[in-house]
Image (spheres, rainbow, N blue to C red):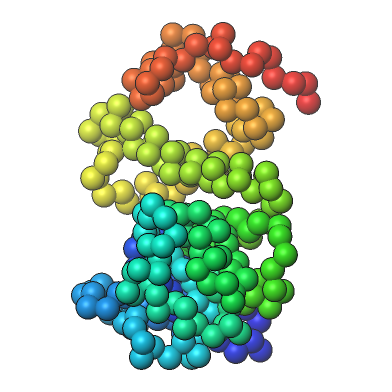
Length: 267
């Protein structure tokens, strides 16, 4: 959390999707004033807990300390940004206002060129950002120190990790492992049968706590085996046993221990 003496920030979030909403709620939970910025003519999201403001020429950008870009726009060329009536309003953001972005639907360089007066702080996270401790990956590059400080103050409960390229790109790709692990648990529950739940089944608080404990054990298995998921699985599965059979029902390829990397290193 930000220090008690720090004044709350005024934050504008461009993008009302899953990620934009998660970031908005995380910043609000940290005590900041947050507004979701929607396209001109767009219908309100229906979430009364979050203020919404329409993008347009009358928007007072100077009222924001930080603008978070979290919109989705699949563009074939950077010219699409300037041609978009709502997004073109971003060019009116004052140079002294910090801008950060989690937009990954286009090359980050396109946004940098679109807003040349801003040293945009690009970072990566997931909708898990709504809860404390979620990963936020920051590239180790030259930023204006005040911009990075403002971003981290806006989202103080995230687990910030700084990485230099090429590790930043590698770790960013591995971040989707959280979603892969989550959906694997859903497939596992469905393979086990109706009594074990699955997609569309409302989990109790006790169920959620247990699933989190299961994922914690996955972390422990990975640590025991030097981060090698194949070795971690082999330490649990026996040839032809229950765990192996479940693996083969859930994944496209059958489990073949001979495909693994061999014996785990001595510790």
